Amino acid sequence: MRFALLLGLALVLASCDPSTPPPPDAGIDAPIILDVVVAQPAIEGSAIEVRGLGLDRIGLDARLSMERAGESVAVLDVVPGSDDVLVFLLSAEAVGTLGPGMHTLDLVAFGNGLASQPYEITLRLVGELPVDLFETPRGEVHRNDVAVVNGNGIISATEGELTAQLVGTFTADAGGSSAVDVTLPVAPLERVDRERGVIVLTTDIGGLQPGTFDGTIQLRSRLRSGQTSESGALTTTLHFNPPDLYTLDPTEATVGQVLHVLGAGFLGGPDRPDETTLIRLEGVFTPSGGEPPEPFGPQEIVPGYVSGSEVQLVVEPAIRRDVLASALFGHARGTFMGTATPIAIRGTEELEGAAVPFGFVLGPVRQVVYVRFLPGLYSSLTSFGLDEAAPEVEARVQERMRDIYASWNVDLRFEEPDDYVRSAYSVVEIGGPDPNGVGLFGYDNSPGKDIGNLRLFDSIGGTNAETQMDGYPGYGGVFVESFLFWSSHPDLPGDPPPGAPDPEPLFDEIFDPVRNQPATRAEARGEGTPERNAAVAAAIRALGSIIGETTSHELGHSLGMAQPYGSPTVYHNDFDGEGCLMDSGGDRPLGERMALPGYSTSTFCHDHPDYMDEILPR
Image (cartoon, rainbow, N blue to C red; front, side, top):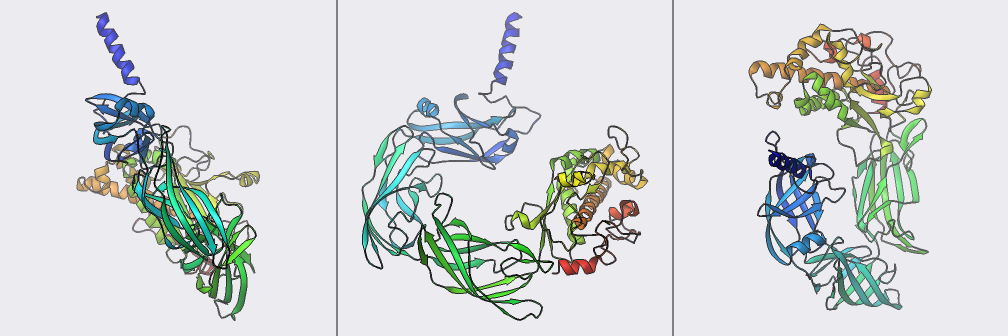
C-alpha cells in the first residue's frame, strides 16, 4: 500500500513538472499542430515555426517537446512575441543531445495544462554550415534597394552572423572616384531559405551621388557555435541612380488618411539620423464648391520613411474657418494637380530626382470609428445565455450600426485601422459591467460637446480624468451587463443601482428561453430544432440591436448631438419623438431598441440629418 501511495505521488509530481507535457485530458479538445517549418539543414539557433489550431490556448509560456520513441529528448522555450505562429529556437543542448544526422521526431507543444497531439517531422542536423556565393546583384540600382545574393549556407540572425563585404571603387557620374570597403549585414530572403540572402544597398557604398561601383562581393558567416567560414569573392558592377517616384496609393483620400508613396532611392530611418527624404509639391489646388483655383507651392513635405521603396504621407487635419480641413491645402475638399519631386538628403548633401506629374483628390471628411469589443462583453454574454453566439451577436451589432449611419460618411471598423493615424479616428468600447457603478447602458466620456465634429479622435471608453473633474462619470463606453436590469430577475449581485431601468416583461419574454437553457454553437448557427432556432435567433437579434443602437447613440453624442445647433450643454432631444435615436433613455421603448416589428425604426430626427449632411456628407 505504501509503495502504491508513493508511486501515485510520483506520478502526480511528474504531471506537474513544467518541463514535460501534461497527460491528455479526455474532456478537452487537444490543440492540433498542422504545419511545422524549419530550415534544412538545421543548426543551433534555427527557428522552428509551428502553426495549428487551438495553440493560443497553450498560453504565452508555450514550450515544445522533441520526442523520440515516446521519450522527450529536448524541450524548447517559445520566442516571446510569437503571435499566430509559435516560434521556438533549437538550443545548444538539443543539438548536442541529438547530434548530426537525420532525426525522425514527434513534436508536442504544451503549456497552461494543455498539450498538442504529436506531430512527426524529419530533421536534418549539421554541426557545420559553410557559406558559399554563386550570384551577386548587378546592373541599375537605387540607394536602399534590397538586393538578392544567391549561394548556400545563408543563416538568420538567431543562428549567427552573416555579412557581405564589398571592396572596389565608386566612380561618380559627375566625375571623381573613391575607394570602397564596406561590410553589410545579410538576412535570408525568407526565414528558412538557405540559398537566397538580401542586402540593403546603403549610401555606405560610395555616398549619395549617382555613380558606379566596380568591385567584388564576398560572404562571411559566424555561427552561434563560433565556427566561421567565407565564400569566394565574385565581381560585380552596380550603377546607382537618383531617387524616383512611381505611384501614390490611394490617389483620393480624406484628412487623417495615410498615403503610400512608392518609388526607389528613398533615404531615412532611425538608424540613419543624418539621412532623410523630402517630396516637393508644386501646382494648382482647386477647392470644391466653385471657389477659384489657387497656386500651390513649391512646398517641401517630410514623409515618414518605411523603406528605400516606400515613404508615407499623412493628410494632416486642421481647423480652417471653423471647419475641419487639410492642413497642407487649407481646404476641406478639392483637387491638386501638379508635379512631385523626390529629394534625398545625406548630411549636408542633397540629390533631386526627376519631377513627375502628380494628382490628388482631397475627398470629404470621413469619420472613421473603431468599435472595440472588450473581454468584459464576452463574459457578460454568459448571463444572457449567448456566450456561444458571440460571433452572431457581433455581426448583428455591426449590421445595426451600419444601417443607422448608412447615409453619411461614417466608416465603421471592427478591426483597428492602419490606414488612418490615431488622431483621425475615434474609438468606441463595448464591454460588460458599468465600471462607474451606476447602471448606465452607455456613456460618452469624451470632453464636451464637439459641435461641428472638429475632433476626429474621440475615445468613448476607458477613463477620462478631465470628465471626472467636471463631476461626471469617468468611464465611458457601452455596458452590456446593465441591460439585465430590464429583467425581473437580473441575477446580478447587490441591489439595482440608481440609474437602472424598471423591469420590462418584453425582456424576459425574449431572453428567458436562452438564459434558462443557454444557446449552443449549433443553435447559434441555426442547426437546432425549429423552436430553439427561433428562440436563439430572436435573442441574438434583440441583444445585437440593443448594443448596436446604444453604441450608435453614444457615437452620436461624440459627433455633436443632440441639438447640434442648440446649447453646448444639452445632449438629448427636449421631447420624445418616434424612433428618435438621440432621445433620452427613458423615452426610448425597449421594443424600439430591439428593432422589433411594430415599433418605430431608430434613426436621427429633427435637424440631425441636416447636421450630418453638413459635417459628414458622402
